[in-house]
Amino acid sequence: MSGIADVARRAGVSKSTASRALTGSGYVSAETRQRVRAAADALGYVPSTHAVSLATGKTRTIGVIVPHVTRWYFGEVVDGIQSALISHDLDCALFSAEPGSAHRQRMFDTYLGRRRFDGLITVGIEPSARELERIAELGKPLVTIGSYDAGASAVSIDDFDAAHRATEHLIGLGHTNITFVGGAPENDEHSFGDTRRILGYRAAMAKSGLAEHARHVPCDVDMPDGYATAVDFLSSSRVRPTAIVAVCDEVAIGVIIAARRQGVGVPNDLSVIGIDDHAHAEMFSLTTLRQNPREQGETAVELLNRLIAEPASSPERVWAPATMIIRNSTAAPPDHARA
Image 1 (tube, rainbow, N blue to C red):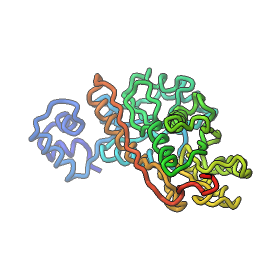
Image 2: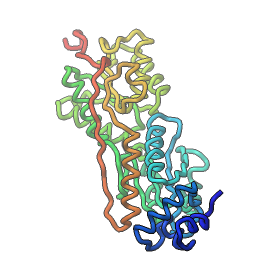
Image 3: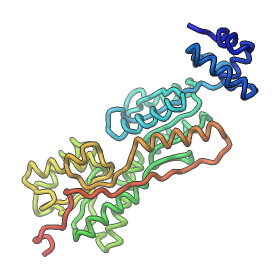
Image 4: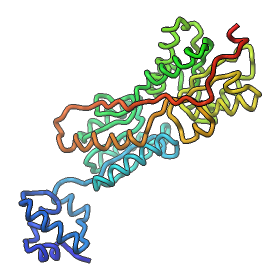
């Protein structure tokens, strides 16, 4: 295997010059840098991460913190982050900090402070326990993905607007008895993004003079709890809404499965709209607000690279688009509801 000495010999320069040309740690003329890189390519030489770190003080490693690695949204975000990091020749150190897990507090208290990163990307960190603020205190360039940013650079959809538009879609079809399903109880500090969506729903209901009909049914943001919760409140036709805004597509899909199993037709008896455009949304013909978490991950890497290059630059907030995708899970309310 070729070493830096072989590259230097082939390029006709000293080892120190070859090292500077490959690591960018000092001045080298453009012509010499090109010659050294051509020699390295010809010999198949790749500088070790450790060597580059010693020469530049940079680890070329980005820490990525997510609450879950198995859920669709977070998996897509991580895929986008990793793809963008590879294109920039950067390494990814992935950490799962599942809420309520035993190791989460130790991670934020001590572990992250001992690790060396050039920057950090956090996904879906909530305001509880000041975790995001504690990460910011590490003094590393930081980008967050999600509604809560604590003054850091951030990328996310506008959760308030997405739920507001979803609710307006149902109101426009003629629904007045619309329930919001999913998320923790309102004002829970563990669900900042969910709370923004609930507020968007309530604002749209109030705007149309339907505030007194607004109702929030909390549940975990996954299919099983969406299903279990819907089984309960759909069982009685007396209190059943004609339409549902789900906090996310996974909850919406759980609601649709529950409705079908109880003989409640979607959309003839019940309209359902979600937020995300989950991989299974098309399968269930779910009307939804589409976001692209993979693109959000890629955008976060671009924001972080700018921060690393210019540490004194001001934080940037990027609002990713959310596009209405109309499928067959929403329709005008049944005639008896209109009457």
